[in-house]
Image (cartoon, rainbow, N blue to C red; front, side, top):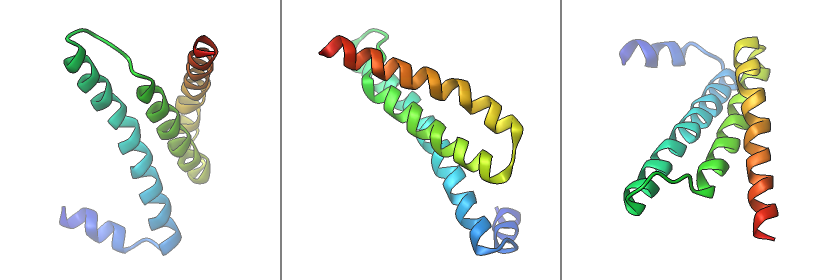
Amino acid sequence: MYNLLKMIGDVNPLDALWLTVGVLGQLMFTARFLVQWWASEKAGRSVVPVTFWYFSILGSLIVLAYGIHKLEPVIIIGQLPGTVIYARNLWLIRKAAA
């Protein structure tokens, strides 16, 4: 933990901000699984709530922004397809509700 704090202390404020953005995006992306798990436990069966898709797309967009800022092609390539899929799922859910 000390090494992590020391490493963060050695970066400039803009990089620290982007690190925070990246971590926030990753936490949001991870939270989608907690939302899905909680909804499934509550229902007593496997379910994927709409909130899962919102956490997915928001987390993916934030991590994608971080990857673009850092010019990390692995992150960019990893997040782009998912972002399209999450948007499509939300569109299908809205279409079905209308």
